[in-house]
Structure formats: structure tokens, C-alpha cells
Image (cartoon, rainbow, N blue to C red; front, side, top):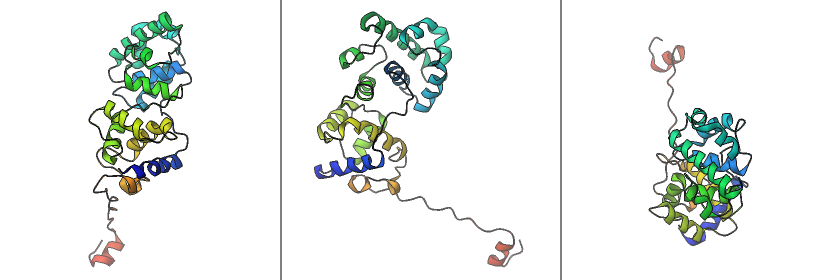
Length: 232
């Protein structure tokens, strides 16, 4: 993607969704951290389904620890890797209470010290909860950044650095939300929906995917006999 095309690319995404945010459901920073921790190799829909049951019962580090492993696993059992995530969440809650007064820390270093919290999770929390201009690169963003030519890279870190360097400052705070949602619903892995893409004109991907052909519905009954000369 040419440098001159980056700004209009993001302007088009912004026009379609001026205030993007995560599709994970949360009402506090701790709930956000929990939801993002649970979302690794799982869908937002699946995580939301589980946390709608969990958060009304336990939505603080103290309450999560009070549940204990067996009860917490019961709430999370529908999520992929739920046993590992249960252990990570319990250990994270203990650290939050021991080192941070039960609050979610505001630095990348402190967040990445929490079990189950890697760079991507830390970036989501820093961006969504604390308003920092970070870019959390997941599989959708990795694909979109490479396919469009926006920030090619073989690893999430390489793509993250490319995006931070290339996205205009006014668009950077929301960039990862726009790219993630675009990858989830339009620039999909198997068949990108180029025919309805608002940024296709600036995208390097070729050949663009054409619209699907409309299925032909052949008439039956009396209408068929009139067209074919055969009895219905």
C-alpha cells in the first residue's frame, strides 16, 4: 500500500464506524482483563456467553478466588482451554490482590507479568481501558495488514511495529478495532468480501473477489410447463 493511501484507508473505516470498540462484554477494567484472557483461541461470542453467567456471581479478584477452581471451571467449561485459563485467572487474581491492591495495573510490564496475559492481551487492556494508542495484533489483524499491504510482517510483533509506524496518529487509538472488525466481517480468511469492502480501492490484494453469483431458481409446476413445453 502506498503511503498516500494509508490516511484515506483509515478515513473510510472511520466513516463507517466512528467509535469502534471490542465486542467482548464488560463493565469494569477487571472484567475486560478477564474477558480478554479468556478469549485466546476462543470466540468473543463464546466468551460473552460464559461471562454473562460468571460476572453476576463473581466479577472482582476477591470473588473469583472465593469461587475456587472447581466452581470457576464450571462457569468456563464451554470455552476452549478452560482448565488452563481457570488456573491462569486464579493466579492473576492472586497477584492483583498481593501486588496491586486488587486493581488492574496500567503498565505493559505489570500486565505481562500476570499469568495468561501476553502482549496482545496487555495491548487490548491498555488501549480499551486506559486509552493508550496500542495495537493488539490477532489473527484477523495479521491477515488484513498483510493482505492489504498496510503493514506486511510474518509475526504479530512485526505487524504491530509496522502499524504503529505507519498509521496516522489521529487514527492509531482506534486502528486495531477497525482492522479486527474488518477482518472478522469483511476481509475474511477464506473468501474476502471485496465486493462490499469500503477500502478495496486502496488495498493491494489481487485479484479482488467478485460478488457471488445469484443461484438460478428454475420454475416448477405450470410455469415450468410453459417454459419447457413439458407437463408439470
